[in-house]
Image (tube, rainbow over all chains, first blue to last red; front, side, top):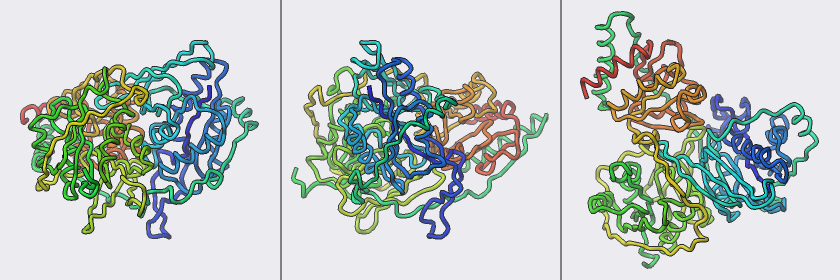
Length: 275
Length: 333
């Protein structure tokens, strides 16, 4: 069984986003950013590794990403250290929108010449928050798709990683309701928080990862033309800061004063018609 | 219908399961874009006369309905919904297909866009229509830490698929009145066209609106100390008809499930009122709730970053403040 795991390199959640000053606020300044593996992709990779642990033999995990080569923070190396067997990098110097990203992934998978049994991805990347690539890619690969799964259960008729598989998935929707899906492979799942707890790379894992190879394609290799963009990010701007609000100190002990303060806040909210 | 007469916009409409009214976000979109000529599609929800009239008055010309029995044994299928909507699109000449950001549209709109080889712009918070009927969009990035102006490229494959975040557009009070012509469609779907469908639906414990749609949210952070104390917030929420959220710290400490998490790795919300209890305001949390119209923060630490975003900040112990607040609300609402 080949499990492909899509991974994106994104700025850490504590990153404060700044715009480049030189170029009329046109782009995001990435100089000071700490790069991490997209947190939702970590759940996808962990799920692939859990399947590998479950079946012991016959499972091949391939991590793939589209993005710039950045040796200092190459998260594909982290994925290999966590336990992925192979990795594919599609080199792209800029952040591609979802359609060309999915097309690049599709063509990289075709070129790699291993059939997809299971495609795992994070439900969205925490930078551009599109929530699109797994579904577009699954449509291009002509396989079933389920998004934002919180539970993944797989059984094999042979007990190993080769044979016939049955999968039960749970997907969380509005108000905490859960949809249950029973499916066969091939299949694409996008993963949500709550699915599992990602492992850390082990020291032997890190040593082994150094010997594993990363197959690299360029966008030219995959014939991804500029015309595949379809949408244009014209300009970027930061949200307007609110004027500072009112700050009260809750008086200790005096219940009358305490009530008076809270009543004042409630009355202000009523005046604004929010209560 | 001939293509030359086709409207330029299709809106995917959803109905609230608890009160059978049209979802606010569906109304927000339709009333703002129907000026350009809009049709609507509703799948699996039997259309009441009342809702038909509402859609007409929000500007819907053609109202396409698809019976709920097309997916036997379930009410949803991502590829099934994509297939049904694509049938309607193929008979027309739409430039844009809209939906609110909901768990269904997030799931199947990208599939739909891929079947037309066209692009989708997710989670927009602003739709601008200029004098020549050109449309441009604003969408947040990094959970709202930054925003971008996004446009479709000239001559790109049509239609473009657009999802709009709930509560980001206001309902246009004077929309164009549409023709309101109902057409029932019964697409034929073979079994191999529906690969994934819901086998079983397990209802959530709460019948409250989802955080992304809620008008009022009361959130708890690490300061709640344990899961049991969240009942204080639920009690206040019951009075206000609010939904209850949590910070990442509270979720990671096991006080609340991830479905309640607000922030960059949870839900991004825009309620009219957000009450943060015992939340310090990490940058990833602020990103997820900063577009709330009014923010009330209760925290013992006067230096907590949440106070920089709060319209009303109360420096105090939530275990003292929340019960008094609940009591006052109970007397007044």
